[in-house]
Image (cartoon, rainbow, N blue to C red; front, side):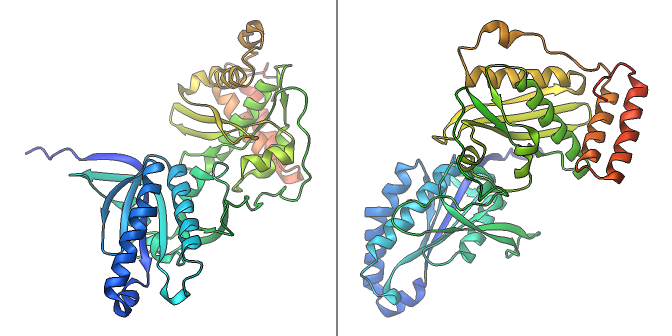
Length: 383
């Protein structure tokens, strides 16, 4: 008999409960229940609705909420916690009703309007390690909101969550007053001075995330970014930040507004690369560093044989989004394809990875890769 098809979707899940609820109920059962109902009706439920959340279910002291967007889930959580703090300011601490909130982005199973799966379980476990009045995010949720929600986050590192197989990195939101806080500097260039924007559209391409599941493919993701930077640099109407500057952010959680201030750029391009067999997928999103808004986002799937056309397509899409009035002839100009031999190109990218940083041992290894590339294509000038 064929099994019934299970409905799944990707969602941001928010789990919340009232800290010390049993203690409060033991002290004043009817009063605590009445206060909790009043808080939910006047504050919590309207805030969830205004951020387009769906209350899946409630328990005596908590609730499970589904959002289509991690950004909306985080903004809702911050709004609730700030409002709760303001409302309880005059209440003795041992009598306050304070929520703990956990947020995770993951795959969920939908069954009769209820939700299940690891996406739900992880959110619930994160709520359990959050401080009273605090918010705890999974690393997956944090990656989705960084640069889009202005909050301060402390890295809690890998956490062993009950009934979750592997340790998970978690982030704790620091709520420092009634307003939304500015982002805590976390990048290598965190103390750099603010640079003025140039007089033409300016862009930094941040290192793309390697989604191949194989650390050995890191060189390919970095090489693709370098080639996209080169392709963008061909447009005289753009001011493009060099690779050496943008790659200082590699492996670091960054806020795009901060990047804009530190590098003096109006736009940031970030994304991911997945190489599997003979297929390559690039996802990219272009963000305005001044407003934090998304200008453009897209996904590109191509065969490895089309890798250079893929780079050009990404570059042209970005240019079109940044500067719609660029002359069509400049946007459509034919890009110079350095080689038709994809094996030579792969060796070239491996050589670049070995040559950075510039140390003798790495340069010797890089030379081997470059010579192998030239042997496959003697006219490959880059190699």
